[in-house]
Image 1: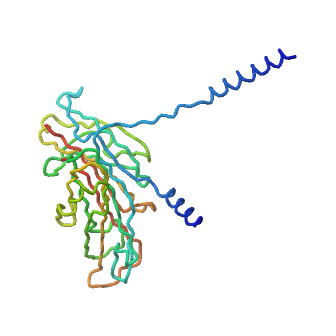
Image 2: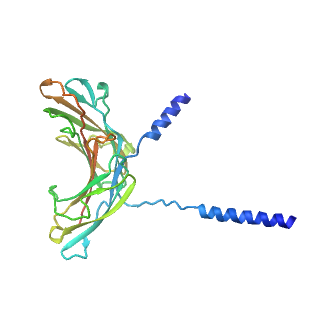
Length: 126
Length: 169
């Protein structure tokens, strides 16, 4: 019984916490310091020990990509790290941009690959 | 003699206090309170190989079904979309056919989440759930790949990805 408890405890302790989150749910565009560009700030937190890279993208209602600019399109985000990043789009695309998404980039041959890729999409609402 | 002892004791106390304050550290705990969706990998999936031409996550065939958990803190704000694989992300070259499905494995609020499974929408390999209540939901996927013409899979490592998506409504 004691051994069973120890095995159970060890298995619980060895199970990695793996989660991906991005906020806010409903971001807002605001005027940037560059003419004709709008900006919004997103925040991402990596609690996936099997993922170190996340890709950002902006989509319209039909999931077609919209041109945007961030400091890096693919962020290196270490386990248990948090990053705030600005997303810029052209003013003319404001009404088309509906979703801003972050997707985990799973390394193909990484031994701890969980076999699950995650994507979180926030929505621009008027 | 008594005075000397008091002075020594006082010096020791002060030095200990100073040493303690020098070693004290503030450990910050940060958090942001706002609505969010968190996707957690609860159980990584494993393909079993019950015969030479099949790879499947079915437990009876030696596989493990991947389980992904969604935590939402705002009701009616997110859709969950889970897509089972249609190709290997890493494998030898081959022609294969795929089947897969997703179902609710567990919920944290049986009253308000009980309808998730009946209200799900499936299109292709993707299953969509409307996350109408706050709390956690565990989704379990199954996936099987069969080599064309029931021929044996070439030897090698096979990896495929379940895609778990949380989309703001």
